[in-house]
Image 1 (cartoon, helix red, strand yellow):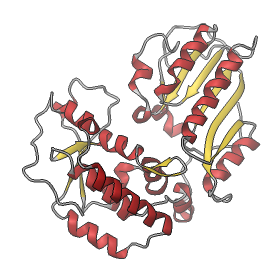
Image 2: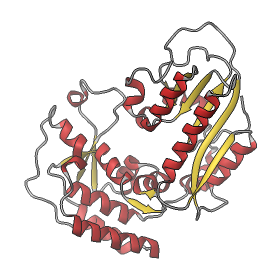
Image 3: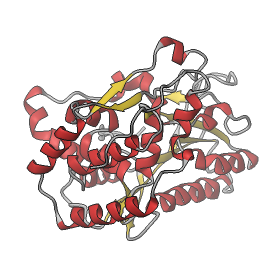
Image 4: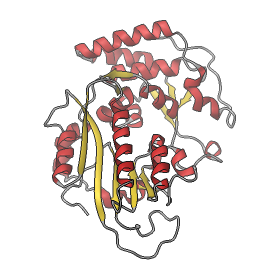
Length: 337
C-alpha cells in the first residue's frame, strides 16, 4: 500500500494486484488471502497553460513521489481525454500478457469506453474489478455481463475513510486553489446553459442532457465546458444553486418519477426562472472577460445563429422521461439573450 498522499483529483487509474482481493464488492466468493499491490498507475493530462504551482500539478507530483506510476500527457490539441483512455487501455492489456505481472486489474473509472479493454483483459486470464463514483459511472459497467469478475465498489460508501477534512483555519485559503479556477466566467457558463434550456420544447430539462451538451462544447485544446464547470465552479449542481439561483431552478425528481429507475441515477430537473433575463444582464455588467473568453463567445454565438434549433437527440433523457412522466411543453419560448 502506498502512503504519503491523501488528496483527491479527477483522473483515471488502474491498480494491479498479485492476488485476489478479499470480497472486492461481492461477486464470486474467494478464500481469505492477503493482497499485494504491485503497481498503481495513474493516467491524466494537463493543459499547456496550467500553472506549475497549481493544486492539480502539486497533487500529481505528490503521487509520483509516493511511487505511483504516473502517466501525464500534455494537451496540445483536440482529444487529450481519448489519448489518456488509450494509454490506460494499452498499459492494462500489456501487463495482462506479461507472465505473473498481476492477477487482478482494478479500474478506477466510470467510463464505458474501457469495456473492450476489460473484456480483452479477462480473455487473457486476468480478473477485473471496477471502482467508481455512483454518479459518475456509466450503467453499462455494472449492468453488462462478462466485463468484470466482481461487483462494482462504490467510492461513495467509503468517503468517510478517504477524505481528510481541512482544519477550519485553512478552508478559506485553500478553496480557490482546489478548483484551480475555470477558463470561463459565470456569465458565459450561464448563457450557454440558458440557451440550451430555452431551445428545449419543455419547461424543464434533465441534468443529464445539460451535462452531455456542455461536454460537447469545446473551449480550447480539447477542454470542454463541463470540465470547466467542474474545475472552476465545483460542479454543475453547485453552480446552478449557489452561483445562479436567480436564473435556474433545480428540481429533484419526485418519488413517483424515481420509481422503476436505476437507483444510481442522481439526475434532476433544471428550469429557467422568470427572473433569469434580468439576473443574466446584471451578471454581464459586473463580469470582466479575457480575450480568450471574448473569442469563445463570438464563435459560440456564430454557431448558435447558424445552427438554428438543436436536434431532438440533444434532449434524449428529457424526452425519455416523458414516457413515464408528463412534462408540460412550453407555452412560449424564452427570448434569446
